[in-house]
Length: 351
Image 1 (cartoon, rainbow, N blue to C red):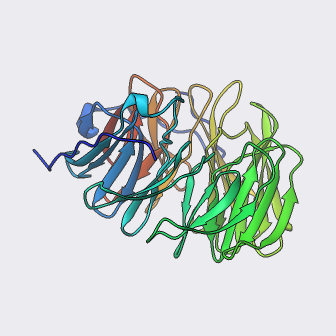
Image 2 (cartoon, rainbow, N blue to C red):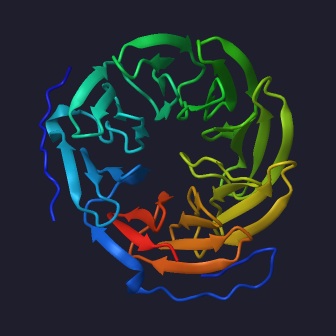
């Protein structure tokens, strides 16, 4: 177990293309910014707290005004590898899960105190299920969230595993390079495998379907696959113009599946019908990458490496855009605000 330093703080004070017609391009406005903080990180929203892991530092903030509720920091000399503490967190009922090259940490959501650490090298992010937490090490491990003990482990294939996904008694991960999608039940027994034959990104499990995106021709073309959760059979496949950025997953709504893509000429977000994969619309940014979108009510929000946050209707029409000075990666949407990071962490008024 490594040593650590903890600091706790109390609360204080474009070009647009689509199949649904031409779009007006509204201008950005600083009035949309509710608050901004210098420390960034991938935002995660749970209940009344916004979490973001920056450079060896985890902040818990008030979504309303960005004030710090608590902060945990780790010394630079505690880790001998850059990026050892992963920025993609897992959020449970009582704990925040931080994966690292030295193990999985369970931190109290109330104050950031470490409850336990499962000491083993981890290779990807965390999936939080109803009764266990799942992560990829040399094996797929299932961890008891109360004790941090490993309940079971299952052998994995390949060395470039994506973060697992969990849903309806199924845990799924993919080997990114070899394109092997593997499903386990929640007791660790392998249920099925599907070989895509090409580079494959992180999965999403929704209802009875597993969604994965592939990169047949990196930067140019790929596919979005819908696999039956029970047996891995292909329900449908949809061609994508552009491939999917590593770490980006399909996002599933009530009727459609949304996917951020990158390409050599432009980044795109596509929306396809959940039933058969029919493309409904495509949104095009002003550079090469649209990242994983977030859904809220009748809107879709996404960041881009053209330094913008975009708000679209579920029909693909642009509602507004906000320009920053750096690439905007993952975004998360709350009831009234959209949270994003572009070096700094900031909150934008949704409407």
